[in-house]
Image (cartoon, rainbow, N blue to C red; front, top):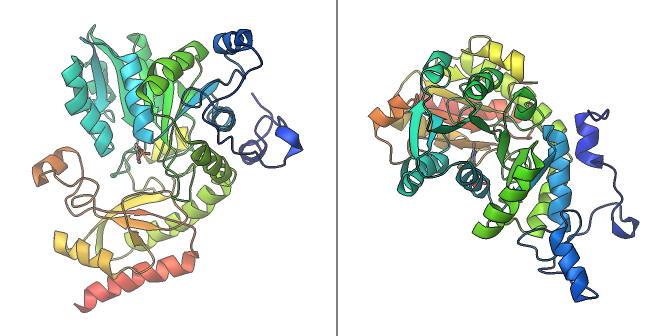
Length: 396
Ligand SMILES: *Cc1c(COP(=O)(O)O)cnc(C)c1O
């Protein structure tokens, strides 16, 4: 265990000095690296540490980000990717072969669901989408073909919570690997590897970068041999490499992850309470509310409930939800999350467009659900904006 705390590690990492004693790391914006002799190339290609040859496989700016995120997630190492989906697709392809089965929670980020339900079956990989909040269902879902259990927690966009330690215990009993998408919580609130997960994946596009200006992905694990295979056989072969500039932006964003999450979460708690007390709101989905199912799991595995919440208005018409969103002024109508700017969206017509009302119900997504990612604007301004939108609905 590193004795420094999260906010310190996010800034100092392992305290290795930057080249030329620069306080801030340079961006190694170079596709390849030169050598003094052919023998030196040979040595670099055979080594795993510091032997930079070509940026699609390894780059010093990416290496710094990988070291930093591994420290923060409690892993031994990490691999960076061009996007969250780059990380997720590479990790799942690396752990599954034709004839295998993946068990996944039934509600997943849209592109992850697409990968598991539409793409992997073409390669002979079957899936079982089950309800991982029901551990008995998980326990009865294994057969010899199952090789991976995959889920997000909190789940997008209904914020349901899955017990990482229990899922890992049951999966490991069957010799099955556990992969967790930790995008919604971020390592500041939840470290799945320390709870038993084998691989953690991230869309660093969201909270980790935190400024909405760099798409990226990360995979973190304890097994360095596995990470080496993931890097060279999958990330590098599929070409899903993060750019050095995006790695630098992500390192910069990462420094303030703790302070950002704590402020966003404080505002989210107030907004959740406001919505819960409004007669214009039927249900609020937020792990920080005592009324929320799975509130006990927050206490067990998270340092806090996070900055994303969803809710359904008392008037359940889609049109009313749309109007509410249109009435907000500070919340940007956009699909991403985790930025300094607050975002608002309607999953049924935006992130989960194309699902029928029946499909949405099966995924536990109310057809008029509104999702908010609380940003860093002044808390009172955000509250006034929500109150203003509710008042505008009332006047109509
Ligand atoms: C955004 C997101 C992804 C995909 O990440 P990209 O960086 O957009 O490829 C995966 N999982 C979750 C939970 C996300 O929010």
